[in-house]
Length: 76
Image: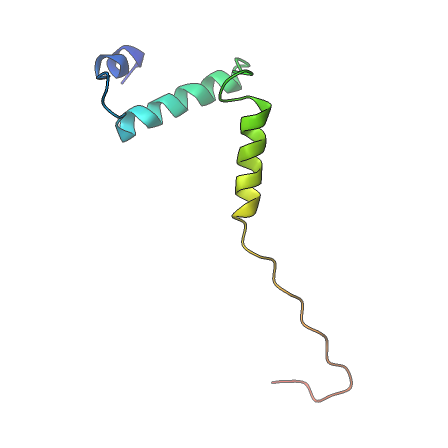
């Protein structure tokens, strides 16, 4: 579906469908890759920084290294 088809299915006052949201994200990504960045909106530094900090906060915790046992009988 193209832009005209996506716009034809927009109903004001109704939440976007998953397909409409995916299409919008695709178009935004395509614009970003072509150098058309929305510096004052969704692509602003504050929004990018917020996404970075959210992603880092969701990272799994790093495993705690265990102490190496020296001079003992190794576990089998």
